[in-house]
Length: 301
Image (cartoon, rainbow, N blue to C red):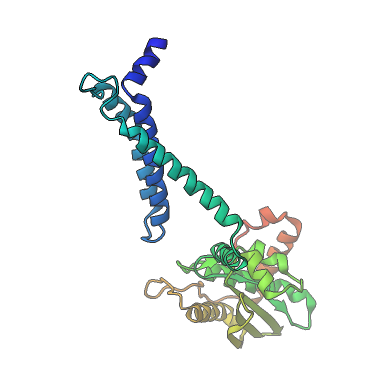
């Protein structure tokens, strides 16, 4: 074993390994700082690190096979300046790491605020995301709440069909039902850029639905509309609401010609209400995890 270690030293394997590790570390730091500027893909950076790892044993093999020659009868290796190079690289590495640690700790308040702002911006949801909050039942009959909940679910399901729109799950949005929570707080907890609020008032065969789109960041209204229709037009109302919301968000529907977000079909109002009532009873008797698997669209028997 001692002879092998001595041979490694004689062939300068230790020097080559140290030099390779130091240079590889510097290259990784350069790529790590340059990648965000040029929007380099993460896979590219990973491939670069993998190539450096693969090259390490190859470099050692070449160092073993092509050992440095000594010249002039001197016992010193011809390339003794590599010791100075390795020392300089080591000092540079230590200095760079020390500067990073020291700079972060003694950064002025303005710089620290900028870092915190950047972290907060990175934590925000990417793109446009919406959460359909439970529609409020304004009917004189408080037992009609199952109908307003059904309207909320149908609008949620319709918006979920839009390809580039992220829609928060119904179970998450319904956690805020009946709670007086700040708009911005709800947006942050649901990771939604926009919130959709609404109310439903049903009287006999007449239906009035009010919907508003709110920007979660500052609570400003982006869009609002009232829909006064017959109960038999319930699916038409849901389609109009979903399309109007998508237009306000400037989101392409991604539908084929003749295709709708909501299946538009003639219904028996009593049968549809019985369906929504039965689904509400099922959710009330079933844990949330199981209730979330219940179908959210109505189909005739």
